[in-house]
Length: 333
Image (tube, rainbow, N blue to C red; front, side, top):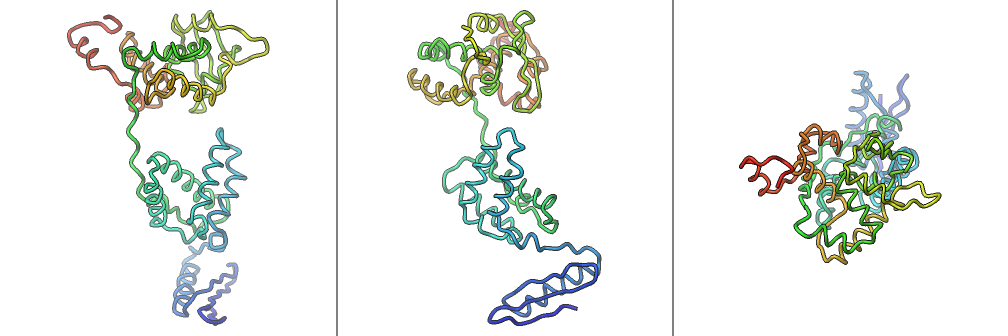
């Protein structure tokens, strides 16, 4: 039987003691609320479905984010990026809420708050993904079995429209003219291979096989090793690169350096809205336009997980499609 005691103004404590179950208590502002809670807990105990809420009622979201940063992010490939996102969430008002009190409406309010600040839908989706992992982690590993995941019920922002930026006539030439010889090689290699920025930055000479015309990537964005075949032009690029003693990296640039250099080259070339990742879009589209490779062969090179993802990276020019309808073979004209 539950015990209800008055501990002062607006402080009614309900306490339940039962054999097999841990002592369970909670304080409410009214006696009616305390009694209703006690009936619910006793009913769950009677039916054998009781799960203690003590852990979930003890910690705030901010405190759980601290534990998430300490225990979870070190396992991730980009752990610092995830930790920074978690720390940004700690500065939000919702972070001061006790975990068990956070509902899907609170997550939706957080989404509206972020949208009002003008952040992209993809940024909000990444915030949601972190929060969802946190709640699931708290349930499975931190003894908060009673906790529900409010992110699962909250409406997600619509995915951002995939970029379809391709190099227009003359833009490749402008980029190359604005780039140093070293970065010209990076641009051209990206256009020949459709490799990602991180993959190009991490490419090591020990994983280059010029004779067999391929490079080996032991770790990629998808956490899977893959082999990238090289065109004759890509082989020429690698053979003409200067070799610096003691430098294992093929292009001698970190991924952030590639991004920063691309921004400077873009500004110098007076080209708007060109990102380094757009070169992967361009290369993928060129595989379809300029070669006889079929869809599955292109997918094997770019390693898109699905054909739907591959289609998002493929933006064929209408004029080329018209030529194909007129009977022209791919790679001609």
